Length: 456
Ligand code: SAH
Image (cartoon, rainbow, N blue to C red; front, top):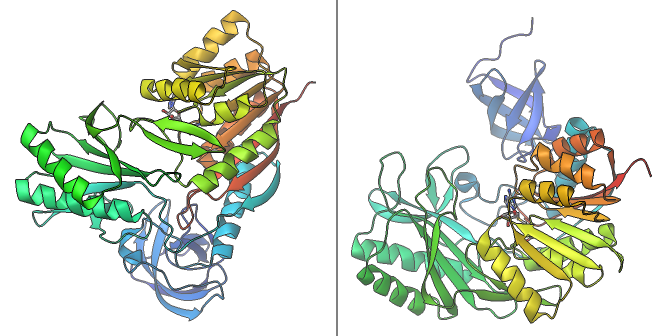
């Protein structure tokens, strides 16, 4: 029997790998122990803080031998916030961690070993300023904006966040002032208190104009809306659109429910890959435009659409990938469940004079079933699902549509790996792929994989 590990025991150990969130991993008496804030190759004196059945967590007490890849975090809130968990490592180490994490996950969970090209790095600026959402809460009766502390419902207040554009920091301060002045509560699910939940600030990379969307579980009065508009217009002169998302759902989904423009335009315009896109607050749009361009460029080069091919773009959002594909493919059909995003995609197709793309508002699973029944035969299918990945029915219907190639764009290596295994069972082999660093300084990674029909 292994020696029992006990809370508060102190050990000396070498960090040999990382968890998927980027915490260091060492082995103590045969068990894996997770130590946040440590780097591979370092030697630490650690203190066990939580000994669970499945996981053991420790705190790094003293670094006995530091890695050359260790860096001083830019943000003073690094330790408490958890929003940008990799600031203590060099960017090279971060890229190495991400590339390795994807390779290892695809193999272990998916049994897949596609040829992985070198990770596409960001031109990392400090501060990095690509995030778009703050959580809104209260602390000691005062409104705060920031991020959830890892594994908790507590919001760490952040005022000068290096991860968001300056306009977002200004908008957050204005919202806090507005909540204080008008005594508007923050949402608190545990207390059953209705109020403000989240703040979304998107800044168009091409024009510098911004869209602000406030998510609230309660209606705002006319007086509250006027005061909010005035404070935000003063703090964010570049703002051209202010919207409310009346989100009464439970849990921490940010944008759900009814959307209403409170002031200005209904959409924000941005450019991506030389195309113009109009975006509603409800529509998904990749953060970090230079990296989004790398991602689409990669997806397109792996997909290699030909001029006589029909392409299905499932989970198409505001049609970004679809319209890029349409430049080279014969015909593109985009499928997306959010109505506003589909409307955005149709309008953007028109404005960019794209005549060979059409868009369908539907659940992806239902849409592929219908395409199967109609006997559609696309040569290429692109999927870009949310983190939970693909429903099994989507994979079996895609296999029935029998495209030659499938390109899977994924923001979660774990569900990607699970789905690659299901695709393998359905006759599609993961051939080649690449990871893109869409979210520098966080542990999130985006991966694109090309699958090919095996029995050709
Ligand atoms: N390809 C787009 C969007 C990717 S995000 C881009 O690169 O911008 C994933 C998208 O899937 C979101 O727009 C979300 O609204 C949509 N979505 C989520 N569940 C869906 C479902 N069951 N059916 C169709 N679309 C869905």
